[in-house]
Image (cartoon, rainbow, N blue to C red; front, side, top):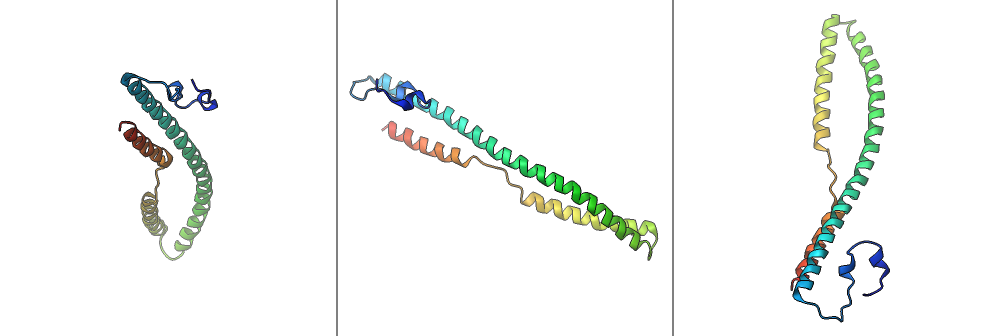
Length: 144
């Protein structure tokens, strides 16, 4: 066996570090290829989990900041809307001023919801996808 520090660091395991000068049977070669493929799949799953966990953490911090800003903005907006409604009530009945404000706010709310939905982004594990493509190429080359 070859003494390689990478072997003890995890990764492909013992079957990837055999002495290349010894003759091996086809069964041994196939067993090693399948073991390599299994370990690569496990490594890709670990990478995808770590990548999604990292992206989710970033998204959660942004979401928390936005939530606090949103709550404060709602309070401010509430006071402004009350002031506008009271100003409208000086030129029309109270119920009509409240109805007008409700309709305008409903339209603005629908427009904001549609805009937010359009810009919603779901994170994808790009590094994992690239690694899987490389692994597929490697497997193709191993079978030749």
